[in-house]
Image: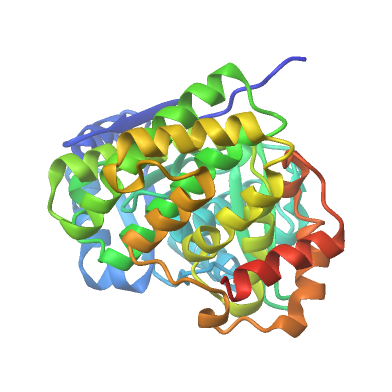
Length: 381
């Protein structure tokens, strides 16, 4: 079996990465950026900070700050209108997964035409997207370097999974200095999102020696540094190591894909507009319990890595270790706490089984089994 490996052509990581990235952008002969971000980062002045750096290099910019936490078809459409009005010839996404996903949606439709719904599924585009630079401010989603884009269709209440080589940014930027102001709950949720990426990629049916190496190192770093990053937001070592961890996890799942945790979490986000990382963290131990017979050796290895890199997890099996780590960083304990309704489980399961992320789960499930996983996560004993 052959394997393909996808990631941006250029990636800058570590302290000072932003300044280096501006130099790289300046050499691309681009004229005007549309900076795609959320209202919070715009109000903090981060978008104009990036814009000021561009102006110093002779480029212009406009800001679209209408991205929601779970970006929607409407966000993409509004961003396309802003792009046209600005006359921008490239896009910069600034933020976490929401900003990156919205920017990818804008850039792919701008280059290919149609509407974002046309690109749901695998490799539906014909042409490369508008040039996209992804500047990351969180450590978790890895959307700044992947070919995955998740957009909520408000009409169907479904999160569309768009997996397309043409939505991969041309440059990703991970400067830990931009991550120091992340609040603890966001640090925890995005960190557990990264752990989910690594674990699902490691047990995926499409795993390879390359993705395994990335996933194992990511799990090691997350076990060691995530609790510190949550408790000590200004800890430079923890922030930098989590930036590397989430990037490695992104390299893993970008190429090995994911599993039922993401397929199910997407549905919770689409219906209830819940934080993606929190949904992943809640579902991860329950999905991996379902996967244990099919992926026991690999899951046992995940457990060992968690044990060896965090003394609070020593001696626990993989399910207990994942659950305890989520508790340490303050993740809610049940879907019930989040307002999820049991009567929706049938519809959620139907849609999860259609999600492209579930196709590489180590064992394929029935609708009843997916409902059973939702039930287990609804109110754990």
